[in-house]
Amino acid sequence: MRSTFVDSPTSPGLRWAGLALAPDPRARDAMAAFRPFFPEAIWTDRSDDAAAWLLAEDAPEVAAPRIIRVGPGPWPWARFGARIGRAALLAAEQASAGPVLALALGGGECPADFLDAMREARVAGPAGLPDPGPAGLGVAPGQAVLVLDPCDPTCAEAVSTMWDHAVATAAGRPVLAIRRGAGAATLPGALGPFAAWTLIEAATEWHLVQDDGLAIIAAAAGVTIRAHAPLAAFADPAEPPFARFARLLAATRFADPFRAVPCNAAEALPIMAAWQRAAGENRRIAVACGMAFWKRARIGAALASETGPPAFLRDPGGAVTEARRQGGAIAVWATREPRGLRAAAAEAGIEILTVEDGFLRSAGLGAGFLPGGSIALDARGVAYDPATPSDLEVILAEHDFSPAMLARAARLRAALVGRGVTKYNLVGNAAPPEVVPGRQRVLVPGQVEDDASVRLGAMAGPRKNLDLLRAARAAEPHAFILYRSHPDVAAGYRAGHVLPAAALKFADAVQEGAAMPDLLDWADAVHTITSLTGFEALLRGKRVVCHGMPFYAGWGLTEDRQVLPRRVRRLSLDALVAGALIAYPRCIDPVTELPCPPEVLVDRLTQPAVWKAGRAAVLRRWQGRLMGALARRGWLR
Image (cartoon, rainbow, N blue to C red; front, top):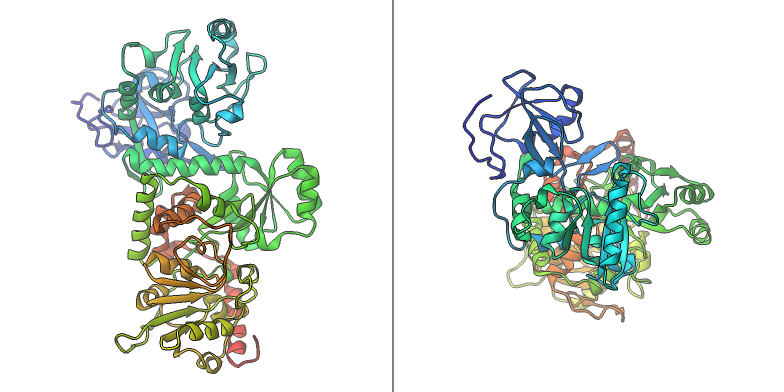
């Protein structure tokens, strides 16, 4: 195949015009994931002189006319059970096996702030490795001399010599041996492996005997690279580190695996960040406990590591035993924690992570057995219980939200409002009521009265929907008050039904048929105990009165009838969104079942067809219809 090279549309450094790609026949199914990276290619089943073969980086040498080798380079490819996430790859044409990195590096430019964005997102190197920062290595930032052990017995002598040189020239600085390979360490006492940014932030120098793509990123971040063997990436020692990093970026192809289209580096970054975070958290989890049967497939996908999903166990003793055997944590559903589990885990020194639904959930009801699109794993507590600070509360109270994060939150908020996305995204068939112009319009969303968020978050305020209506009327005597029953209650799944006659003693209208985005657009204010509707109203700039203490109260954005003294920080709306929807939850794409950024989940929430419930949902709907009919007749509360 002889053709004139022209620039690739995704990366100026990779130039293959009229490229015909025939995936390696031994891995043809896996190669489908690489198609979005090669938009200029013609994919073919032929593997003759008219086509190049696309091979993985570690594939053996084969007799083929042309070979395009691909690999992760210094970018995270994440494995979640059988699913592999790829958003970036290095690709190079070569005639024989060898490192992709040395051949792929080309010329180009990159955004000056992209390295800082990578640092904030903790994106670089293999996904899921521990990332404790310099303190986790017992050193001050930028002080350590790191000797990178490739764990390759063929270069053991060179590694030993490198160690001796590093110790002799350390000038009093701490010298640490760090494992950078999958084999056995050749240096006694080698630590790790650790995530790339921990190694970068801890180090003043890296010592290497083999090419390591991360060294390009480390050098750009200010680490001095000491090569004890020829390194292809550092063939020109006079080349400025940031120019080398620019060449790395130019030689990288990026693609969005959720939309199966090429993308640029900035668009791929939040995808890789979601994988880095999820892979790290999942590696800690050995056992899942208290998960309803209909949630297990989605939870298993969400919590899977490279070795597969965690074990699902019910018995506290068995869960603790298995977690101790694997040296991992137990993830437990917040409202289904088996009695005695926490005490047994504490005695055994096993960490407990509480699992709950995230604030962007699904296109349909969870109570109708529809798996969710986001979860929250919390090591401190749970977001709806104000008795103790949750991980979310700590994020909101302490995190320094960067301008880039706040700008992203603003874009996410605009997308949520513009596309009418809420927690359940139910379709409505009625319009909000007409109100005399100038009269205040107040929405009172009903809640599930026995829900944990009400039981724990109501504190000293109303706990019943009728009491909430009474309090709203007392606070807004001249307003038009509209009561909206909670969808789970209206569907007959949960407790909290209020008979219309009782509701109309305090409300001007009762309505269940309008879509929540329409009601939020209609309302001037929302009165709630702890409902997520209050948060959704804040996104739209509405006045929100909280009679309980939900996660979004106490930060200066709501009118609070209860006080939580420890919440003293004043947050902007975008900071609240950044913490609650970006930093805290784990989003899962319902199509690929890969961890995804919240922006992808927003897209999916506008696609009802991708939200598929199992067989149990059919029986659940019939149960709901029966219970709902009984409640409407006043026979159930």
